Picture 1: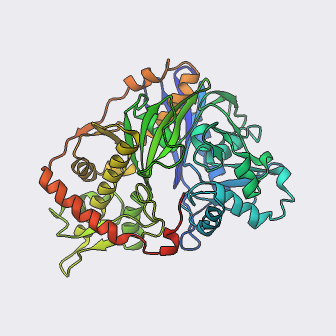
Picture 2: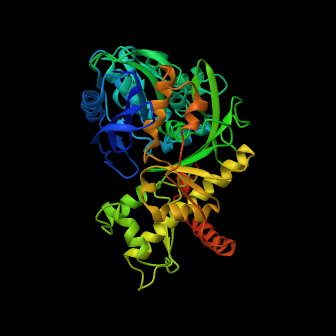
Length: 490
């Protein structure tokens, strides 16, 4: 029976995961394959689009074999990462460029001088770089196709018959007119990007087309960027509900409603308007606050410093000391996002003494990420003109119970932990399921949310204020470490 089942393909920063989402909101038949990004030079993050293709096909087919047939298919994905390929051969013309990649900072500065403000983490200048590097004269442009990862996945699973994206992904490329949610012809012309390369923007929820690379050619009927999928997966479908996903980076998203946010681009406190979903041509808006480095800092402790055997070891090690003993960490390995947007800021570890050990450093890293979470909350409240009574959380870091306690302490409000570690899969399943009638609408989806745990803050206001003051002072010291990069504005 296909009734009550959705296949979801979820492409994250470091892996591809395909699962079956059932009508009772269970995520089952999980098949996952690691597809790690590479960093050939400092500040560069590249993806192997062919490896992603193979992982998508193998995991999707395996999940379908375990739990199929299904009513439809949903896609969730890391946003803004960029692939350009030849439509005739389906072969990428160069490496995929990851959303964290900073190689186009100089391009952003040059465009800024011309009045076009783009951030290096957007797709726009990544696409420009790929074309300028591999097809500088645009001789092959007529057969080239651009896509963010959702577009690449849809192309792969449809054997090249679908070249689509949705507004949640298109809106963070830097290539969309925010007033129309259509491709901005002026920006495309400035970057010398042929309009023929661009995918069709379809609804986030609704029948899109058959996926002939899969048994039974199920219908693709849901697409969402990872953060918007996570938002929906945690039942945040009405105005004022917010979540933070603590993954490689950290993103807070809050629903605003059917009216676009006041700021057409960046808000005064460094947040951005986003489309949280579009269904039946009706758009729901939100705002987003971004932390460029979250779980990446724990990976740094593990992979580069060798302080951890596994990321999961961070909880026990950090619990082995009661405090950081004055050590403070600023998670700015790739610069600071909201509210500062200082790409020249760099990570900072302050207060080290001869007695500082692995435990204190690890605890300081977790506390620093939690403090950045408060940056996101305060910025979203200011730009959206609302107050968040509580915040829902998901992402790999929320498997660390101590870290979740630190977040609650830093925010000074309850934290509701997602019942599934990665709510992105569930959210994409909901979007596809609504299109197929498995759920009536967003209200029914919201009613299904039940947190795994509610963590209350445990420290007093004075202690919280002292920790905050110490962190903000350290953050000020981390700013403008590389002044040229700090000059990027958007």
